[in-house]
Length: 260
Image (cartoon, rainbow, N blue to C red):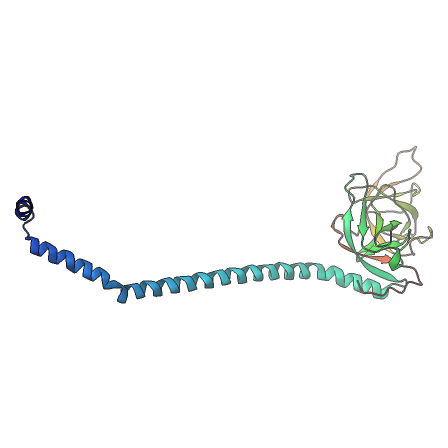
């Protein structure tokens, strides 16, 4: 009796009969359970396509990363190629055996300008060996091990190279002044030295061959009456702070003939 009252009240409120309500509910359920035959297949197809797109996207991302790496490497090769070409030409023209070397370390002490190269005694490198770059003199070896050598750069305050003014043949001693610069000492007051003069090795120190390019006169300060020598600043051709590759002189009997 209670169920009939409820249905009657329900019919009066909703305006539908129990049979109509049951038919709608049953039809909705039938339609739901009939979906897998068509719609579910479509959903699965969409999922499969989405999965494929994700895989393709991941593949493209990996390809982009690879191409970026290759582009960086290409730019690196392109940037160092001119330096390596100059070193190769210098090696061919040199009258002494020269061996290519990589700079693998730099001294971090502010008042010391030295680097470490990956060539040592096994390669025929000894203490005092001349080190050159494509633009000119870079320094000399001061310490060696079996596989590595320490190079004192020409800008190091302890460095000293017998040099002369190429134009007038005025001699002097080139000393390192740090901060990528040098000074030409012991040039007598009144000597003919002007801005832009080329400074080369004189060959009188028994270490550096004669005529190697060193740098350019960048400042000439007038000496005082009490001074005996001129104050001459020289800017090296080799930018020591940017060095990556050098040529190092090896013993004449060295069998090491690898290209730089």
